[in-house]
Amino acid sequence: MPTWIRDHVHALADQTQTPTDLAGCLSLAVLSAAASGRVSVDTGMWTEPCCLYTVIAMEPASRKSAVFGAMTAPLFEAEQHLADQAAPRIRKAELQRRVALAQAKEASRAAETEGTAAALERAAAAVEEAARITVPAMPRLIVADITPERLTSQLAEQDGGLALLSAEGGFFATMAGRYGGAPNFETFLKAHSGDPIRIDRQGRAPDYVHRPALTIGVVLQPEAIKDIFATPGGRGRGMLARILYSVPPSNVGYRSIGTRAPMDKQVRQAYHHHLHQLLTWARQHSAPTTLTLTDQARARVVHLHDDVIEPQLRPDGRLGRIGDWGGKLLGAIVRIAGLLHLAHHREQADQHPIEATTLRAAEELGQYYTEHALAVFGESETDPVHAAARKALDWLQNRSPSNPAVSHRDLFAAVRCKATPRSDDLTPAVELLKELGWLRQAPAPAVRTPGRPSRSYLLHPTLYQH
Image (cartoon, rainbow, N blue to C red; front, side, top):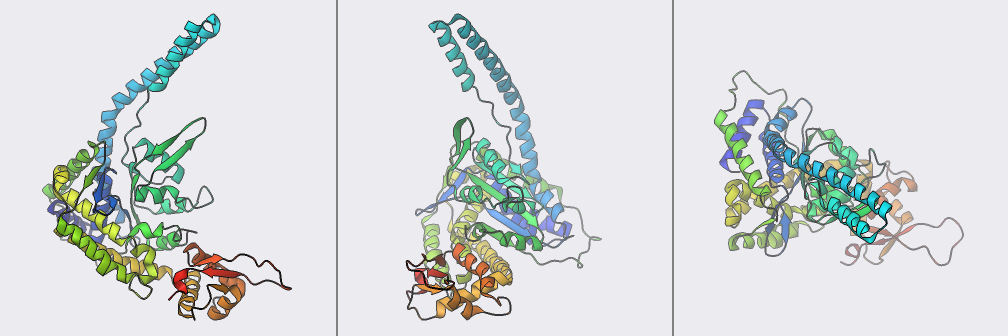
């Protein structure tokens, strides 16, 4: 981290007696929000938008809210400043639109009364003039507890750049279908990868978010992570693989505030000043700013992919059991490198390529997040469904590779235990394996046999072609 962030993180951690992980991980989310969806990194092989999804889990009474408030305060201040600047323009545009609509209405009445071609032409021109006047949306940088549908609309209004920042984890329950009844991942998947989003509007043409870039920075309790992993389809659709997890050790019970001095005023001012500087620079660029890599940094990316990460994604590799998350690790490292580069250079960021030293710093943070992801995903697999799915997958990987299909009966016989005493008890685990792409329902046989037919599943080719 550059000095202005590092000093603020350490001072805040000392002042609040919290692990540096909390403020440190939040600083990445804040940098992502400050980039406002207007910055990406071109590796020479692919392009990564500089937006992150981060989740920090800490026990109750860990002073999460105090740290969250201090780290995000400059963003809320900047949002208020942008709103104050935009208010006169918005009021003027609203007035112009009301006047134009009134004139169009009057011209339409005149056309109906006169019934002449000239009157009709004047009315059509007045309607077109009113339609051309758009009222700009109030600038927003941050949202909190919001439905996926409303979030999509907000992304469209804010030209694709928005940050979902919250000191609570209720947002994930909303995403899982607390209001709509069914999980809705579409916006979150596309807003992470930068894929265009189409919004259909009743009675008018659809809106498009051409370059969505959403930031997520959420602080929650460890128990809430289990709820995230229990969201149907969350892992199968890749939502869980897009999140950088941090579960810092708790220091509750070991804290002391008697000798703690308040944060140095200059440290706080430097953090606020440089963050405002970065956000102002990013928002001045209506078109995306693309950062590049030095030759050494690009060579390091190739090395990380070919020699470090890819071998770990093999079934017997360290990241094999979280291949969905591990497959996005290099992209996350590149995104973090872009944000560190922004933090170092700020308004001159686009005048310099990203150095190999910056990429190595991002790589260290990637190693940190890898350890936490292994812990988080490992914890989630202790529930019966994940345990049964893991046991079934292990059996499928180790059996004789002679048949590209397996029956439900044979699969149950192989993994039967106290947690799955009946054949139907295995169904949730099978559904999970189907979501992850390891199994697919086999077509029903053309000729039915007497009795209850056994379900069969087709296997992913990598399970029997080895």
